[in-house]
Image (cartoon, rainbow over all chains, first blue to last red; front, side, top):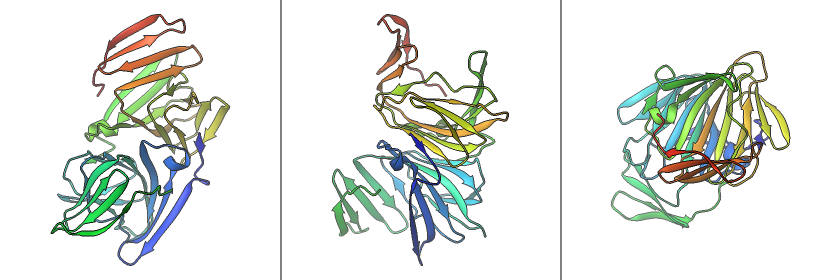
Length: 154
Length: 154
């Protein structure tokens, strides 16, 4: 099934903490279920998320345009078009994506869809625990901050 | 883990039937195992493979540069940078990629790694059956053409 760049499902997020990010879900538009495949565009100064790593999901990033800064355990890396990043499931290399440039940057991001996962946010000590049809967001001291049902996002 | 475009593992295939294709395995270079993530570049006139569909693998394609022609059950589609194609597991939409232009074209292709799959080639009636650690290539009449052990490719 062909998914045109002009018609793929798209969402925008904008707030003071993380800035502006547009996400196009190419995979959901085309009916994929085994992994998510998204084109994300960060405005200058924006950040994708807090630094995190997944126990059970492989993540893959490919730079499409602009200058992308990846923050990993060992610091910052500046990537250009054609460069990639891989975060294998279970490798505790916490990462996020930052646009430290003066122009928008875009990258593809792919992540396996699994029914059970723990996502670690080492800068806060918090974890997001996906357990089948429910999820729990847990603070560093083990107390539950929020919980809910896993809902289709797109 | 950062995977630079200049250092990712790369292979080239060139023959009279399918033409010249270069494949960079970004995912294997970065240690991913749950899916393959490749950058493929087709020379003018080249074809990725015979038309096929998978019973158990989701496939995703994203055009990076040039003009990409996708052949599906319903015919040919010309895609440009930012366009995508999705082939969900089990949907019998047999596809291949062709470069019908006069310049190279490049696209990302992602496919789930599964231990058991049947890949159908409807133009010949043949199937490639992956059964754990072994594979069998079977003709339209059910006779086995070739078989072997599944080996790491990269």
